[in-house]
Length: 70
Image (cartoon, rainbow, N blue to C red; front, side, top):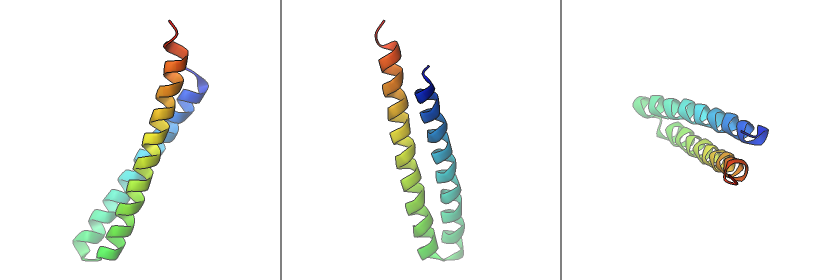
């Protein structure tokens, strides 16, 4: 696997981890009734999840470029 693909996989994993933290924070704030903070964290989680998907797509593209030529 190319170095670029590995880097994109690591970045995707980091964004998924950040998204999970924001989802946990959103749940905590939702339970306490602070819906504004819950919405903020839910929005942040969505952004991280989107970035993770972008890195996943890039990793897949690099994989296809290097292994799809066989």
